[in-house]
Length: 112
Image 1 (tube, rainbow, N blue to C red):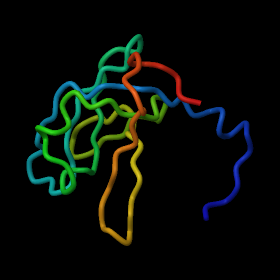
Image 2 (image 1 turned 180 degrees about the vertical axis):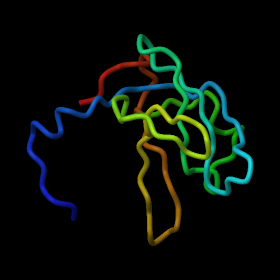
Image 3 (image 1 turned 30 degrees about the vertical axis):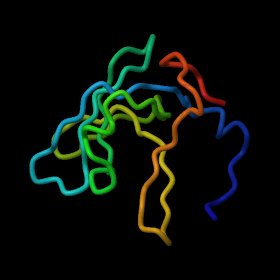
Image 4 (image 1 turned 90 degrees about the horizontal axis):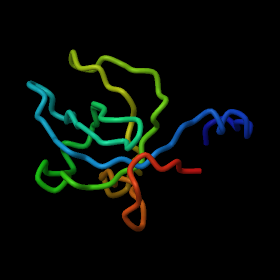
């Protein structure tokens, strides 16, 4: 387990719902996709996600996800990633499962 954090630390995270609008291959990247997502009032963003080995592009467009919206942007393979999607990693089954809302909800909705 990672070190305990305070409630104040958790409260710093801005978790939001978003819908994947577009998926692009990243040249020479075995694990990464470039995703264009709609975060409602926060607008469209680009994020890079290491889910390529677990999901086909065609299955992701239109999928609603949960993201960390206030993660400091980071360059990955020359692309500025403006957030991170949440996923569960099963070490025993060697798979990644994207965390998503139980039902469709407005993009940009705060998750708490």
